[in-house]
Image (cartoon, rainbow, N blue to C red; front, side, top):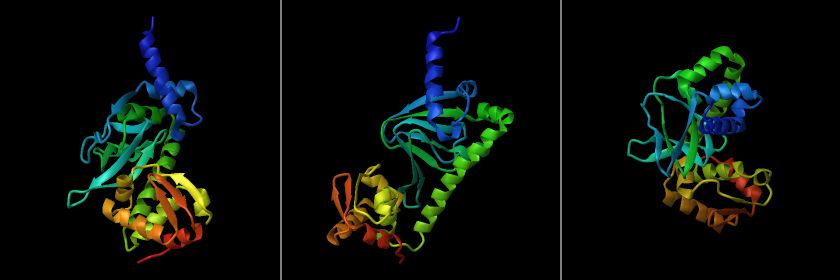
Length: 236
């Protein structure tokens, strides 16, 4: 007779995997097979999930919270270049590596599903179509990394911030007034666009002074979407 607690654990894992785009369309049987090689880990805010150079034990699917992928700069600062939220997956590219190429840290209390490397590779050998879905997910992450590299080469801080804000709101991206809440803390946003928190505060202040936006805590009011778009297109 199966242990009821094990059945419940497997059910929770299957439910978490089912929400992830990579596993969309898989049957319950296939999801159960994958779930058998998974485990759930809880992380406190700022707890490190893995560090650059550590052996790869698998990739992750977020059940709850946010995880930031970051490098440590030569002067010791943590620069976050990607933030993942439930139900996204991350670190799939590491499945083809022996060691993680970057660091991962919880930005708030989070729960993640570890999809173990050896088990998932065995599943891929029997379901090659799943590998195509994995490649699609990896290509999105690569696009984000390339965008970060482009931002870091000769773009003004106002331009980087404006583009980031436009990506958070379709209305603002269309040049219209908009209101939205920042999906990450301001210190995380600063890291994502490659500046200090003080520089981010000064940049917000300049955009406020010019009537482009209004900031109330974590809420952003885009007052002039057209000018914000113009800022996003500016270069140094």
